[in-house]
Image (cartoon, rainbow, N blue to C red; front, side, top):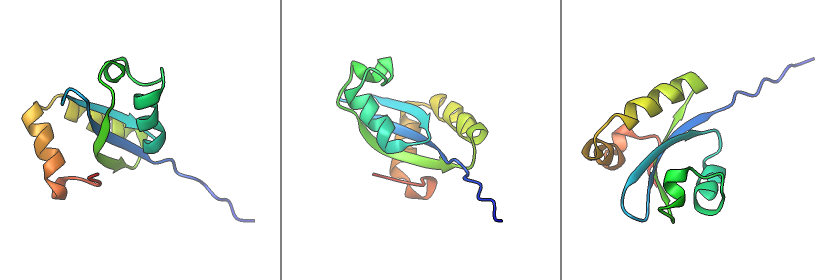
Length: 96
């Protein structure tokens, strides 16, 4: 008998809002979360007032703890530093 353990992936992401502001969040499902930000009351209060939003960057993390730490680090950055993360592909896991 083989046990299969599914390891949940976590993502930290940056959205560009309609007013050109940036929003940082964390999720286990990027597609669902971006949909929620654009179409649902489950989207963050910040993004509900700034729709539509567009996913501009994400990073895959190994676990929730790592994702929380990365989200906290990014949220403390200046707008300029966040834009550098978005434009610097060597710093990103995904650029959309």
